[in-house]
Image 1 (spheres, rainbow, N blue to C red):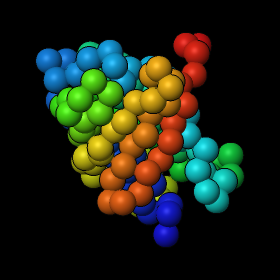
Image 2: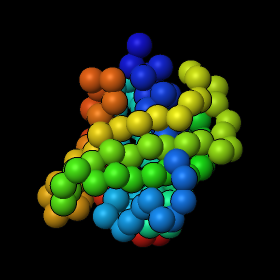
Image 3: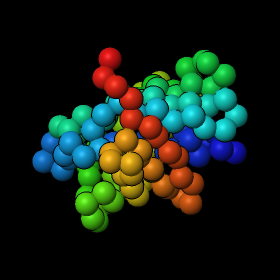
Image 4: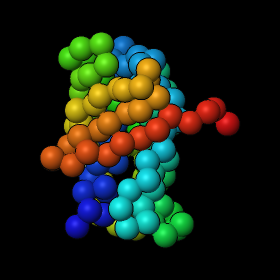
Length: 125
């Protein structure tokens, strides 16, 4: 079920500021299937948090760290490690995703296990 995959994908995170940079930093939003959406904030210092909603109800909140490894200017790998979380669905684990930035850094594609989620960058609030 896609919800299980989404749960796993957003158990993202990893280590310290030395392993992150501003290229993937920002406020990100993804609208997924079955009324699921994800809001994620990624900081250039290696911190990360997310909120997953299904049918406008919060089903998961997580925060932790991430590690970034570049494969090119706009591609690479992100490893998200959750440190604190609440979850009504799925299992929360460390997640490794291939990432691709597009549209001048306004679109972030995360792929894990053959499933790709597309996030759009939002303005700071």
